[in-house]
Each structure stands twice: as structure tokens, then as C-alpha cells.
Image 1 (cartoon, rainbow, N blue to C red):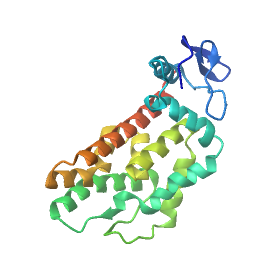
Image 2 (cartoon, helix red, strand yellow):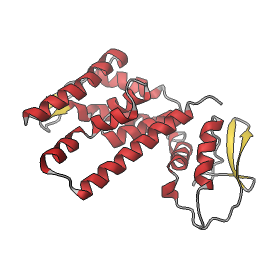
Image 3 (cartoon, rainbow, N blue to C red):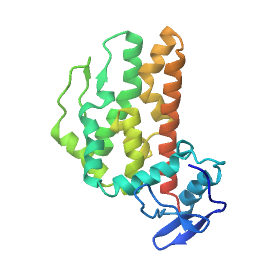
Image 4 (cartoon, rainbow, N blue to C red):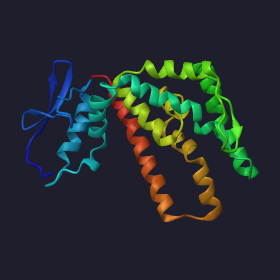
Length: 233
């Protein structure tokens, strides 16, 4: 759409901060007024709006997109989103290991086992590991523990967690980042371990490299959204 506004500002609102376009509060696609919990996130979203040229490109506004997702989906479908995130534990990427080659097997052990150990110790969720692609039945108590942790997240953090989990294919990686156990870059490296190994063995493929770069960017944006959402006013 064409940019029709001139001034982008941030103002205190009843329950936080609003982004204003020529004095009018930015709304979500579902026409909900967007109220941000702190000035840091509001100013970051405002910067995305202010950076638009003659045409507004939603693809260049990832933080705004996550804010809108929070308002229109997470806050209105909380139970569904909790289930969607928690269900990843039943088929978490970290639980499915290669049988060969030995170098890849070792890398998976060294990168992924510590994350599963952390989930067992910190979250009370010991997930089982298998080789190959045949489904494995996870312990009900472990799945319940993961769901309980996810359910404790407030809406903005849940949005970020959903993004990081979906991008990585692992709720353990998503929670490890969200809980501060690992950094976002380390989470990306763990999530892309298999693809990185294949590239090292077979050489770079332009399409694959672009896809991985896009996923890396998306996960880092989600982690930054989480950080900003938790920032002090």
C-alpha cells in the first residue's frame, strides 16, 4: 500500500505504549488497537514504519508483523497456540538422529544431547531419542511438562516462542533460547546442523543457502522481539 502518513511517533497509552501515524494509533489487520508493553518495543516498531518509502512493504516490518500476530491470533486463540507449540515435543527434531555417517552422528550428539539434558533438568521433560524417521512415542509426563512451561508464557513471549519453535522444528531449541539457556545464534546453529553438514559434504547450493539464511534471519528477529518485549520501560 502507498505511504500516506508523514509523522511516526510513540505515545503512552492506558496499558503501555502506542505507535502513532500522524497521531492515529496503529491497528492490527483485525482492526485492534496495538498497545505495546514498553517503550523499547514501541520505538522499534515505530522505526519500521518510519523506514518505509513511498510504498509500505509489510515484509520489511517483521516486528510489526509479530505484534499484529500477538493481537490477532495469540491473544484470541491462546489455548490453540499453546497446543501448537507443545505438540512439537512429540516429534522434536532433536530426538531424531542419523544412523550415519559417523561425523554427523557425533555432531548431533555433541550439539543436541546437552539441549535435551537441559530440558530434562530445567523443564522436567526427558524426551526420548531414536534413529531414523520412524515416529517414537514420548513420555506423557515429559509432554505435559513442556506444555505447562509453554502455558506460563505471556502473549508476546508466546508469539516469539511459537516462531522460534516453528522455524527450528524444535520446542526444546525454542525454549532454550526463550529461557536464556542459549543465545539465538547458537539455537540457529543447532537447528541447521544437518543442513550445514550436507553443504560441507556436497558443496553450496544457492537455493538452499538462501533458504537457510532466511530462516536464520527469521529466528533472530523472533529472538529480538522476545528481548524487546521483556525490556524495561
